[in-house]
Length: 81
Image (cartoon, rainbow, N blue to C red; front, side):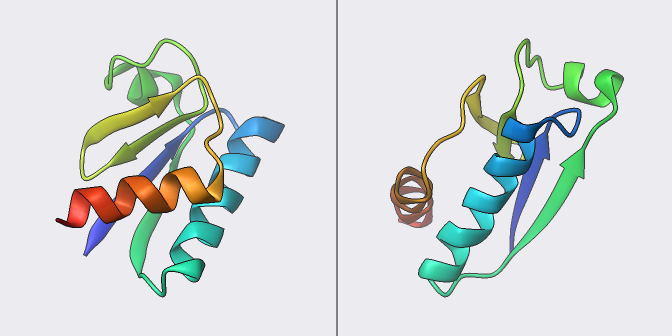
């Protein structure tokens, strides 16, 4: 199963990113484990300099922005192929 981590302190953009991830997964009828990472030392361990950030299966895929649900769907579809 895919593991998705939302990296951020809990700011409004971090919450919006989590919401967009859940919406994208719902639109695709996909399941994934979603983990919120809020500790700065854990975020820094990914080399992320700006949040929110998104990590899919331990790969940083977005940082410093909130992709739309459609953008997330496109990324997940490409990753599965």
